[in-house]
Amino acid sequence: MKRGNDFAVKYGPWALVAGGSDGLGREFSMELARLGLNLVIVARRKELLLETAKVVTAAHPVQVRTITADLGDTESHALIIRETDDIDVGLLVYNAATSPIGPFLDTPIEKHAAAISTNCVGPVSLVHHFGRKMSDRGKGGIILMSSMTAFQGTPLVATYGSTKSFNLSLAESVGYELSSCGVDVMACCAGATLTPNYINSKPADRRLPSSAEMAPGKVVNEALRRLGTTRVLIPGRMNRFYGFIMTRILTRKQSISLIAKNLYRLYGKNPER
Ligand SMILES: NC(=O)c1ccc[n+]([C@@H]2O[C@H](COP(=O)([O-])OP(=O)(O)OC[C@H]3O[C@@H](n4cnc5c(N)ncnc54)[C@H](OP(=O)(O)O)[C@@H]3O)[C@@H](O)[C@H]2O)c1
Image (tube, rainbow, N blue to C red; front, side, top):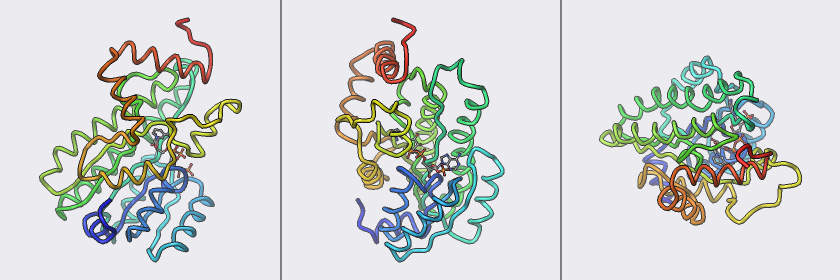
């Protein structure tokens, strides 16, 4: 990772972590504060948000602002823009995501729509605003949390997976456009990561960790270290190996079947078998 000072000069003085109070987002908040960046943390649950802000400021001498808001609600984007009007946000981490799990048709349309709002409309809105400001300043960074589900269709999380493909494409496209303005954009395509949300989403009898599952801190460290060196990151050697097999060795159809088999084993009956 760039040494604290260099990182803060390039990506400071403020970072905004959209979805920064829990799981990977909390790790981003902690690590960015350690690197000397002031923070704006956005999340819905006020108590957890305030607790995260307290832990961060107790550990590191930085300023922390909190915004309690639902990123799936477009009014929250205007609120965030207003609340950050007086500061220079040099790094945007869009980490929040809504991930309905289950057969596509059995999932209410409102849940699909909420995933699209939080995972697609939110990043477009905030990247559009902060990307312009960074471009005007001639420096900055944007990390969009994507997933290995971005690389092919993923049954049982069809809409979530599609939103992650959207973020991958958004990061690659905007990253190319902003590269000449000194702004680094990266999609972080994480594999399974042991966050509270991920652990709780697994059925109670399948919660033992498997070898490919990563600790949130490792994902965040790799993402911050690689920002500016790549536009698409798959954190973790094991995940990169799986990614290679899924995208270079197997056909798309074979990859989707393999993923489906694993997910149906975890969550329910496979209609193909
Ligand atoms: N964990 C994994 O295995 C894994 C794998 C691949 C990719 N990822 C990606 O990594 C990111 C983080 O995953 P995670 O497991 O750490 O997620 P998480 O625990 O569900 O959420 C992380 C943070 O986002 C906030 N958040 C969620 N929805 C929000 C909303 N609508 N508005 C405002 N804040 C919201 C949460 O706080 P509140 O709930 O209080 O709002 C929390 O602070 C996601 O983009 C996910 O797609 C995760």
